[in-house]
Amino acid sequence: RSRGVRPLALPSSARSVLNLKTSTWAVLHESDCMHIADYSDPDVSLTDKPKICAPSSASLKTWVEERGLKWTRCDTCFG
Image 1 (spheres, rainbow, N blue to C red):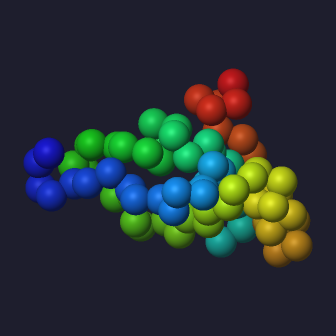
Image 2: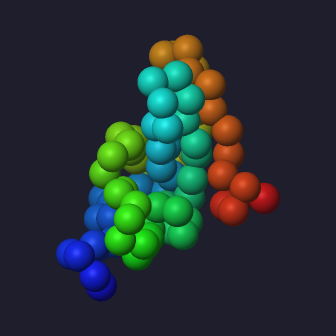
């Protein structure tokens, strides 16, 4: 891989990932989604946006709702 880009290492129990796009909006992904698991474009950073991982999407939905955030499902994962 060019410029030291490596796949994102997620905890083995993580099945769902929230990508916090802004301070008020997140996108829910499955952990093996191409947008999360292995993005080899050297011009894109997987660490610029915070990620929240959990064993299930239900706990992540609760997490965003408790914080008053808006969220959507990834069309690739859940399309």
